[in-house]
Image 1 (cartoon, helix red, strand yellow):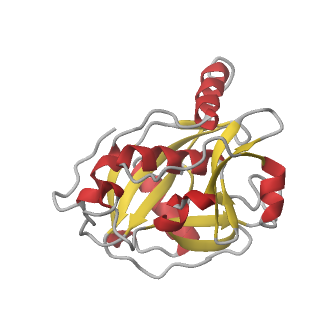
Image 2: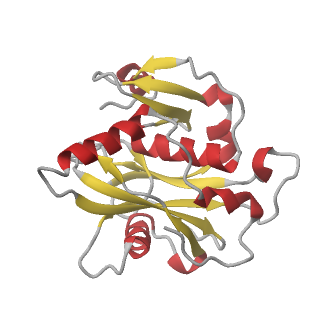
Length: 238
């Protein structure tokens, strides 16, 4: 789904609205399970905010024009949460009855989780839904540009442990990229950065956008690590 966007959106973000081919078994598995479960149950609806910040000017010397200060907003869920505890994710959550659509859901949830000022955010695109098997959510990613960054931080410690503005240069560093394999055999793109492991749906969405936008550097796709071991390396658990 495309939406009207301002003409002055940075050129380095222009391709983030174009869905890329699946770059991970995680996303393929998510869609397969969604199709299978659609015969027996109705998934709950949710949306996440994939919020990129950085200079409006592109860097002509960098892949895809990515500026050196480009970043993405991520959160780490509290270790006490019943589902997805301790996992790194985009801000977001379940649809409320009063929401007008996925953009409204993503922005509302991001404000509630991080204290974000939604007036400084410009939505660019609504990407296709992805099914998350453990929570039975259909998650809609909303890509946006953080034109006027605001102060952000943990609002509710019972739900969120960290709110982090992660430099894209760190996520794209080949030394920080690999694949993880879970106990069921599925693989996911993974990023080890700032004491966190970014994997699963979040890692898959980032990997897909990085590829579509042309920001990638060559990295070792044969580096496949055990998921639980990779989590333990940064003090995280399933």
